Amino acid sequence: MPPHGSRNNIEVFYGYDHLPRRTELITGGLVKVHDLLEKFPNNSNDADLVYLISSALPHFPPGFASLFLPTQVSLLAKNAIRNKRPIVLNQNGVAYPAWCPAGWKRINRNNQDIMRQADYVIFQSEFCRKTSEKFLHIKPKSWEILHNPVNTKLLVPVVNKKKSPWRLLVTGSHWEFYRIESAVRALEELVRNNRNVVLYIAGAYCWGQDMIESEKRIFELACSLGVHDRVILHGSYSQDEVVDLFGKVHVLLHTKYNDPCPRSVIESMSCGVPVVYSASGGVPELVDCNAGVGLKAPTDWEQNHPPDSKELAGGVEQVFADYSFYSKGARACAVNNFDVCSWIKRHEEIFREILRTN
Image (cartoon, rainbow, N blue to C red; front, top):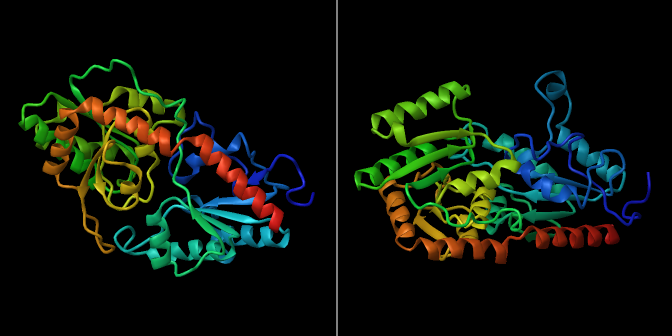
């Protein structure tokens, strides 16, 4: 095993022997690994350093190992320390009562363990830093805030997009039904106001036992509100399908409460698609006043606060009242603040400094 940092090219172990390709379905924290892989390839045998993402920490599957061995991430960290490999943690949120009422303390233990061992912590937002401070009670050795990136050369606006009907999108990993319910009820409000509008629902439907049950619940809600013919279920999609998805729509409805640093919001802005969002979590750090409309939300750790459907509909009306302004503002916000080239360059600077000093 060569001395760490001795190669010209830095190789990284991301905690997994196999990482999904861009053409495969992938959600959550591992998505951003694609942005690093070309520059810093995955090496599970003799990497220069370990790079872990707090929402995608490796773990043993249920069974013997998970019952009797330390957590996989704990073993990985100990192995890295034994072989004098630095650990970088990308911290994108913690558990708290509203998010996971029964098991939030247990979930946070893994985050606490790896943050103690990390040589450097990259917080995805100031919100991530504050919540880590509040619920993990650990001060990192070294840290900085680095928001999620987007490839602004790949994700570009569609020229001369048809303006009718208004096409709305709600996407992400939907662990709570309220995220979709808020969007469907906003759709009803807009239809009641005689707007020609449709709603795309994309991403993973995770709240039910299976996809069929989840889709049935969406259909029942849409039927009860009389908008079933205006709801289009898109389902999960790969990273290679992102451009096509955002190219179809005009506005992203980001209804998740206290979202730490949603990549979908940044992808949307890069495609010139303005965002109407819950002004909670880390999203206000991402979307400036020219790129969308934020809806006020309280600060609460005990329960979620879905955005009001009338306020969501009002935000959509505000965007369409000056669509060109918001669309150009969204694109400029992404290009100026979240381009992937700057993000990768900063990672290289962090990696080389850590390897030099360890």
